[in-house]
Image 1 (cartoon, rainbow, N blue to C red):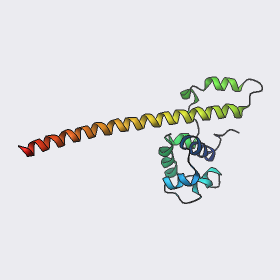
Image 2: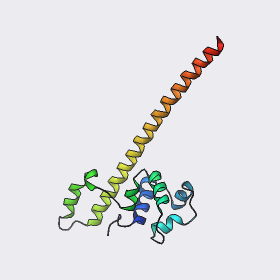
Image 3: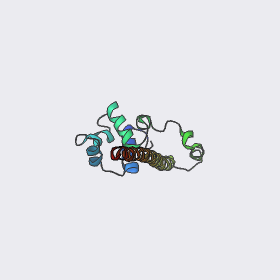
Image 4: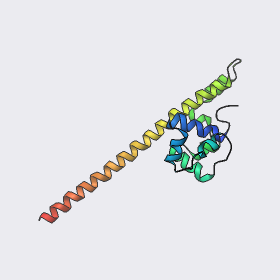
Length: 142
């Protein structure tokens, strides 16, 4: 068994290692009732599609990464890690943990890149608004 075997373990992983928030904080951020995240993480309840969509946006990952785990390990360059798993004496749980840490880093990097793109887009729009405002002010002054 690895840390990515269940939906609950994946939610827990992203909450702790990607977002670094408590269950309660995640519930507040996503407007969920108290205990919802705990129930999902413990396998006491299965998250619905609406939660998975909200959580994936919150975590900066795809819904499939929550529901199915790592969709394509080659996408992340994990082929070498899979080969290491075949070496006698290597604990598969350690390999799974390394994969989890790499995914957390990649997810954070992708979220930061998207945030920068959004910021750049907003700056561009603000620049256009300022330019139009100045033009309008000049037109009114004349």
